Image (cartoon, rainbow, N blue to C red; front, top):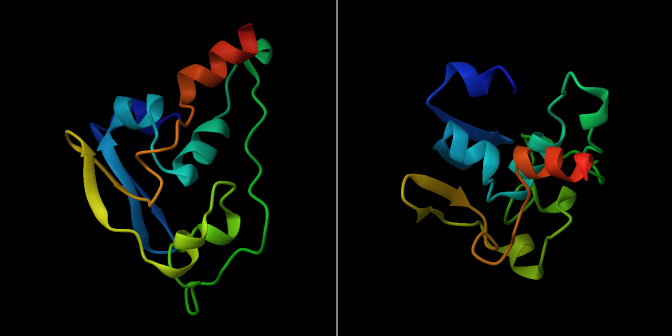
Length: 123
C-alpha cells in the first residue's frame, strides 16, 4: 500500500469482490471512511522503528467469495458492525466530493488514517 500512495492518483479498495471505498489517494490514506480501509492503513510498514504502529487485527472467520455473508460482506470482521450491517447491503454513494464509500456507518464513524497512526506513535 505504501507504494500505491506514490504511483496512483486514485485508489479503490475492494473486499470480497465489492468496492468498499474509492477516493483520491491522499484523501483515502489520510481520511479513510470504511473500516476495512482503516485496517489496511494501520498495516502499512514504516522504516522508522519509532513509528511502528500496532495494526488493527481483523478477527472472525474470513468469509468466502462463493458464499459471502448477507448485508455488508465485511460485517463478520468489522469491529464497528451494527445490526443493519448484517442484513442490508450498503449503498455505494459519494459522502464527500470524489470520495465514495459503501458503509452504513460512514457518516458516523471517525476513522484513523496513516498520518494519525504516525502521530500517535510519536506522542
